[in-house]
Image 1 (tube, rainbow, N blue to C red):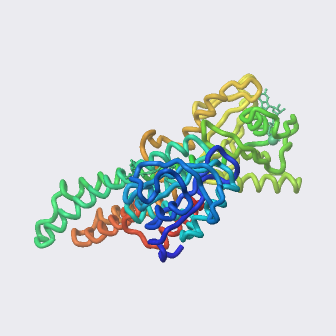
Image 2: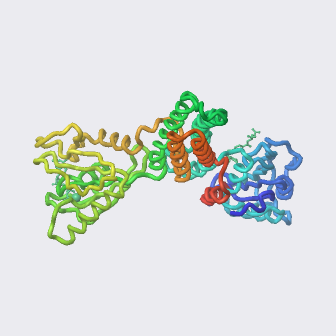
Image 3: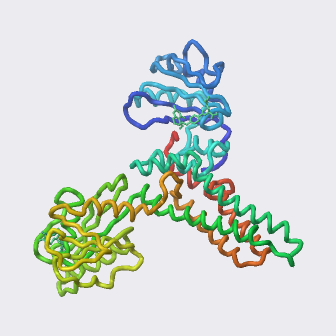
Length: 439
Ligand SMILES: Nc1nc2c(c(=O)[nH]1)N(C=O)[C@@H](CNc1ccc(C(=O)N[C@@H](CCC(=O)O)C(=O)O)cc1)CN2
Ligand SMILES: Nc1nc2c(ncn2[C@@H]2O[C@H](COP(=O)(O)OP(=O)(O)OP(=O)(O)O)[C@@H](O)[C@H]2O)c(=O)[nH]1
Ligand SMILES: [Mg+2]
């Protein structure tokens, strides 16, 4: 997206395609209200109406043909979503009406808005920071209540405020260092340097801890069921789903190819992956399934490692990838226990015993203890900026004052990028490219 033409007047259908109760054509820019004059006929005239008012009347084509009855909402700069003059033409939610109204608006001199351009203008007008703009995008596409809650928090500016708290500690340290730089033999006292720096590091580390949870909440998680043949993987998958998705037999080696199924865990979208039981085998097909299982475990956000509680315990094979996070489960708890272990969760796919506890443990393992009511990092871009800021803070810790000052300035720059106060144009453009037209 180029930055040319940001001062012209843009228009788009702001509502979803298809029939609906109401539809909106949004027009923003210096000519928005005079363009509205040309398509809207009512008792008042949009360009002579105060901001914050609406008019009711008719939407008409260039030759005077009646297109629909509707409303015109008038916003005047800077009191609008974009910070510019805005006219909203609200019609009945008919794609045929909306496309004719939009054509007329374009005929009158507006140009079609690019994806995210209304929100880009709000950002450039300083009405939203970049993290808030990203939250708008997440809110529009939120598929779960957890994702919606985090997006709404981000939109409220809560993330920007958390980042500002970190930045203020760093700024304070930097000021103390700069004040003393002319007297290097003195050195900056700990309460002015080490203490605020530790506070900034702790805050930033906590914020980074929310990143995984944020991504899981918005994009969902992959959860692989792993274990020896007959451990009860397919049975547990079926029990969690509530229907028979995977074949279960008393024969070890039943599941060979992996299979996936979708599940919602308290609002978190989860892909469950059933895999072949891990064992040494001469069967080529089964061996391929075992290799696949190991690979799937490595790619999962969380591994459920199942062990049959009704037979003598056999250590899980060592090939479980170390990077995968593991939750241990003892299966078949309805049968007499051959062993117990307080670090495993006991469940029965047959009676359902232990399943509520397992669901809770999964939810906790996926979302971690990211505090409720606190803003999370939700995009890769935010995580990257926060990581770089933390690396600079950590580098500063053991450096002499003058060199530490440089690292702190870099940390501040990374934090400013996070909220979008100091960020390259191409990064901003990449954020808005993901928006839909009309947002
Ligand atoms: N019809 C409609 N609904 C919508 C939007 C919209 O643009 N149009 N929004 C957007 O997509 C969201 C709301 N966002 C908005 C945020 C600020 C302003 C605004 O004009 N604020 C002025 C105060 C106006 C007044 O109270 O007089 C301001 O802050 O100065 C408008 C919409 C959700 N619902
Ligand atoms: N009593 C009892 N039997 C179970 C339970 N879960 C599984 N089984 C039995 O254990 C056997 C193996 O179950 P599966 O779910 O096929 O085990 P799996 O881990 O998928 O096995 P493979 O696909 O061969 O690796 C079947 O006979 C199941 O009925 C349970 O909770 N209680
Ligand atoms: Mg199976």
